[in-house]
Image 1 (cartoon, rainbow, N blue to C red):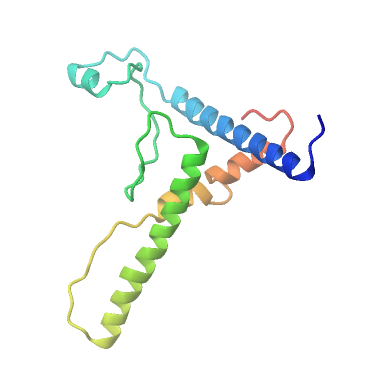
Image 2 (cartoon, rainbow, N blue to C red; image 1 turned 30 degrees about the vertical axis):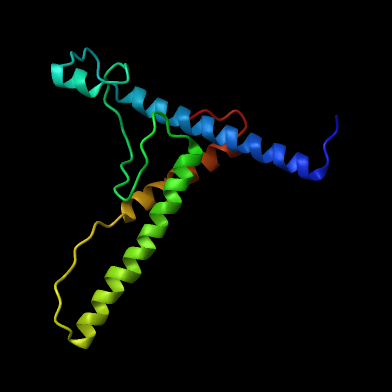
Length: 148
């Protein structure tokens, strides 16, 4: 059956999302495999933390202190949602904290400095060039048969 233009575009978009998600999951799996501990003997505390039944291994994870949702498995789509939330949080911090505090200083208003976490490194890890996650996924998709 032939598809009309809208159906073809939706199928293309679904295929791209599926490919990106699988590439992302493979990348996470590959990084975690490369840092896996050999001959690890878990302690009782390690077994308690390991409720999911997975073998213990060192992992590299991205912790989002601004509201990362906890799922058994995070999809590429969820990473994109979390990335958007990180950018919004950064804008909020910029306008509510940084600029207001500069305004108070300029006006000579007596106030207490408010400290807050800066999520710039998290955003750079995802969108940074040339080594950000999105840039690396895009680059990998440009090369036919690429597998790094």
